Image (cartoon, rainbow, N blue to C red; front, top):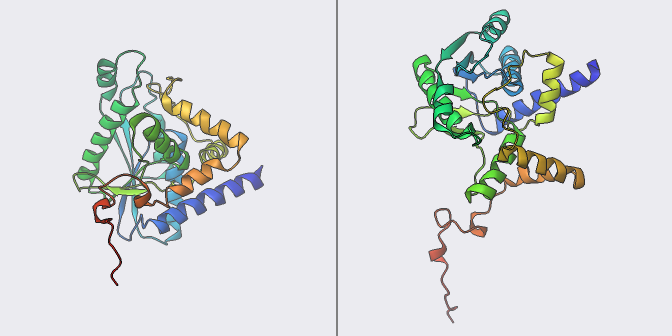
Length: 262
């Protein structure tokens, strides 16, 4: 058991190290806001960034931020107690986005989109107040692949999740250090670590969400054709704009027939 835990720990840490290097996510002097939801992904993100901080490879600060959305039954004591015990600076932000989502979204419809927008807007505001230079989110490799397919199948566009981007208003840089990490390995790591997981009672019960359907499709596909997810993920780093049809990316107008001169 300890051997397997050590193997998973090394693999996840290596994945984060590679992502930080490949996409230049963290610089000396950064103040990184780790968005902590209480789920396995954000706990893992915080754990690995704390490890990297201790190595002194990068000189950066960490502050953990949790948005208490006032969901019924949310155990408010868990994260403050956990973070206090770790000795990590943190801020708990209380904002009742739960009531807004329940009021605006009809019963049976997916709540994640509106919930995500409200949460993101609040976190950006908090980041500005705290003077952070980077906002770290816990999205992993599987999230990125699923988002790509969701957008292709249901939104008619080729768009995934960038490992690092600047917000539309230009104020914040968002990073996803778990970009190279697999969800199954994160799940196993969180079980080894016995993180005090807080389930999402708002959208976690929506079993028929399209993301869940995509996740199942990928799992079935990987079982039949091992390695398909890795190939899809790899394709996002090898894009040929001239082989697509977006004239914002490629100037098709310059392709005109010209006779060879004698």
